Length: 65
Image (tube, rainbow, N blue to C red):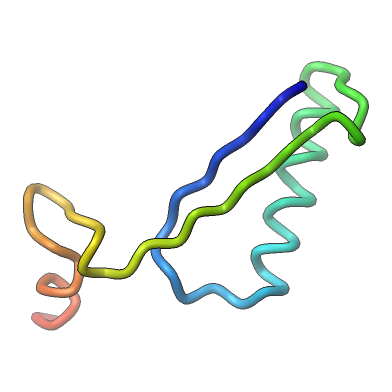
């Protein structure tokens, strides 16, 4: 049973997340022949304060822009 975990910063719409789950499922089906009913996708969202690039919180990076 393929299980895909996606961690991303919050901010996408429900529709975008649903489309991502569909396309990830389709990719697994097409690449390894899995039955779509066996594919699991979990999305975990984090805030910009919980995500860092090069040791710096994204909230700080975004504030500079």
